[in-house]
Image (cartoon, rainbow, N blue to C red):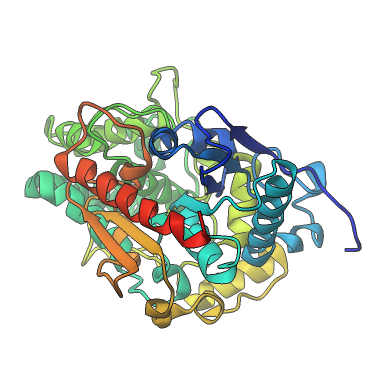
Length: 427
């Protein structure tokens, strides 16, 4: 690709920084616009005020406005420069350059990230320990994405969230999906269209699969974002969305209407949708948990290596496979590439994570991603923090009166560990 350059966006605030003694807190941006993560990671700025840190949020190449080739970034072969290794190198270069420009060569760097960004923060500590003193990897599924997990785990854990509210809730979901299947088998496409207020009548098994994926994706987001207060992270979500969803699923005898209304919590939070366009509201892709929409979804579709699937036995969803062979076929057809199974395990230490140091792996027990990550401390400096009643990287969010005691305690532990790491770099 030559020696070309591109503009990488980053956000920076010196509001709390003690230039003589303060550390640098660096957020390793993930699969979206960096403002979305900055506005939903208030713990970092709260901690920066306590520890007098400079704060930087760096956008990941190919996401948000950091598009190396503009609108052609997702063409082949231009998209081939979208790799974890390149993203980490971008962050390393940005850290080095900004430290030089700001006269901060002696300031230790702590990296933070949530979800895929949490994976990147752990990888930064492993790959660039000369630049990074420690990492908080929140809700980072470093094991499942390295091919070391159970493909049934994710949707099993989504189901567990709803069963945790009420066993009859998951039974209602299972029953509703069975009715969808019964109508599909009888090609009752008119009934499916009216039951789910679809803009266009399904007309093929492919359309029915899209409907199932659309509906399943709603439950994925409800479980991930099961925060104790309303949020505006991935759309508008009410407080305790799993509770709200279960109340909708149990609101009456018409299971299809209940399922439609439950999906509407995600897809029609404003109430402005008069009908659901299956193909514009949900994109089936290489991530069975959902790729999102727009150009960010294209980047994530190219990057992701996951084989989660639902089976209607260990979970409440229709049986929808996504095997390594199916992923290979998809990636070859869509992107002209062949996945490298286990590459993340090879590159980023896989089952040898105990040989790393100064990494916090935090996970909430409501988060379906949690069991794809590190749940047990591996050494005195590779620490696992488990957060009761915590959803997807709740600990990175700013303080809220509705926070459970567990996340308040987790943040204190994280703050204490980070404060211990900072002197290691000679402050």
